[in-house]
Amino acid sequence: MNQPNHSGILEQFVNTVMGIKPGNQQQSLNTSAATQELDIKAVLVYKLGTILQIGVMILVLLGMEKLVMLIDQNSSFPSWFSTLITALFFALLSIRSRIFSLLDNTRSRTTYDQVIRPRWSPPPLAFPIVWMLIAVLRVISSVLIWQEINHQFLVLPFIVFVVHLALGDTWNTIFTVERRLGAAVPVVILGPWLSAIIVTAIYWQTVPLAGMILSFSCVWLTVASALVFRIWQLNGSEPLYPLKLAYVED
Image (cartoon, rainbow, N blue to C red):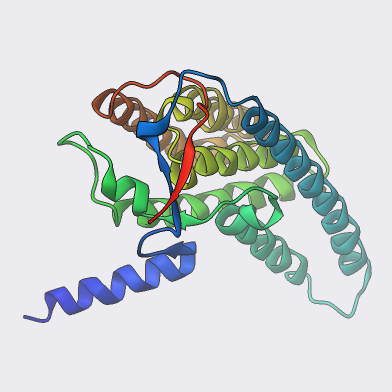
């Protein structure tokens, strides 16, 4: 009889850690009011928002490099302190990279709960749990890379990593927040999925163990991409670009 209670506590904990808000969003897109017209403004906003987020995160990488350098040069800090700071930093990036984005990156189950899904689709709670696991794997693999390249941050593996995170946040805006199911298909394939493979390959080339650890994210994103594609098929197969849609109040 206590099982539902434990499940509720687990769900609340996972949603809190991952920043997922339950309940309906204040606004939703009226897909019935869509035309076939490309929303050029939305495309520009997505591109600009992604580029700015990448730029900000690269500056943060530079700041972390300077900070860790000062810590390593200060003998009053224990030798493990910079490793702890680095692990916490990559945990922040992995779980809350969206704080560096100018786009609306509200994490919500609303879209996933309301669209038609295939029978094989995972339950909603599976997503934040898996992403928590991937966040841990990202931290471990990134710290291994950081140790291998002499405590540097402004290097190719981490630059590609933040690009991957920014692309994932932009996809979240398109699919979860704005429910543009058509545009979400090419974006998830050319964005989060492809960049995850590139990041994993670069990590693997630098430290094979780091690449092996990170490879699980590629498996999960392959499943997620297939799910996004199937959801698009089951919900009308709208054009694969952002349409001009009307916002309506719930």
